Image (cartoon, rainbow, N blue to C red; front, side, top):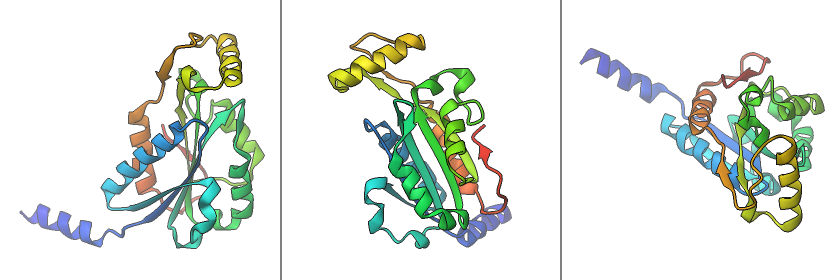
Length: 201
């Protein structure tokens, strides 16, 4: 009975964090991942706002306790708007607990599904001076029927080169949702202390 009372007191004393998840998506799958993160993070009594990078100017950025940025890859690049946001708000980002995650198909491979081994995450870290507290890489979704003719052609070529699925009717979700949930827990617990980025596993 005493343990239960202490637990309730700790829950009441735990400050709710106001968290922003800012993202860039190509075909909508990164949006799905962001919404999953929101769902899981809010289980820990936090408030989460999910916003596309194109509309962030309507937000009061300093009001957020933590800022999470997520971006998908298309043709080997993260959206330039993500870098523009980081460059314009670097001082703010460095003053808060922050995290970054990349969504890319190459992360379907076990040897490339960690921040330190994923080529796009490594490239990202070379392109910016921002060093978020947490990093994660999630495998994306392959949806040939959804792509336009040129994208379908190019992505099939990339998949052929990397020995991935090339069936033009294929729709495959490579995302490890448990990994997404684990990252959500890390975000809930992360603090501003320390400048070294930690990975999701």
